[in-house]
Length: 334
Image (cartoon, rainbow, N blue to C red; front, side):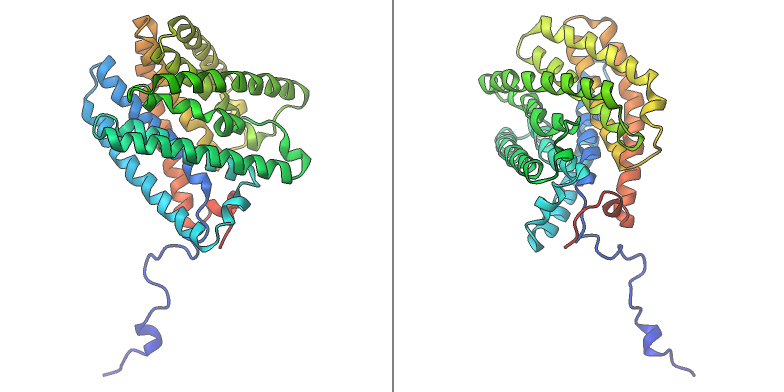
């Protein structure tokens, strides 16, 4: 009876092993689709109130996203523990800056997820998120100052980095932090307007390369968020106006869909996810002022956005598991 050689008995690589370096090169680009998934879950929670959708859809979805977010956070922590400066390196590149801001902004939606279940935990996560997002903004400002001049060009990602605080009132108002929410609203609205205006001028002068066009969708996210927060704070006329601006923006995006996606699928498509989710949430919120047509537009868009966001998130997570996402986004490796 022949014996199997030791070299064959002990495989040097376990079956279906994760790609080498998966935990050493965790890309921040995994977080934009997670932010979008959180938004979809909260939109389904709203749909259960406004359209009578089964409440378990949103809660089950949010539970799964919480686990995914925690897993991604642990994976990134494993990388940063090995070399803390890796976070500074990732902030030097556009996908890294977008991912860093999406990671900290997701804490606001995690807090909103916890509100019905654990008030203390929601408060802890909310204020941890405000601190983390501020630190992230400082890291990004440092990278922009120290980097080449061309990187200081205003991009839609600036909305995530510097206006992203406006997501916090989604959790803060239900928790009773109305004054704080009003201050965030008043501080971030002028910044958002400045970014919109500068971006429009830049677009008219030079346009946007095809690979970066999905980022243009991020401009829609603050429109929806200011609409949501306006209604939460009782600024109904302003919220109503943002609702119509959002509808107009959606039509423009649909007409220009071919332009936005001309570069083909890439990790940049993660930029589509949160704006789609935020729009559905705004439609349900503005429907408190005028049910028609906002409520049913929100319901239709939510169904379509759920399919689109799930598909994009699946593709990007698949890239991460295969080890290609970090290479495509030039993420640092430790």
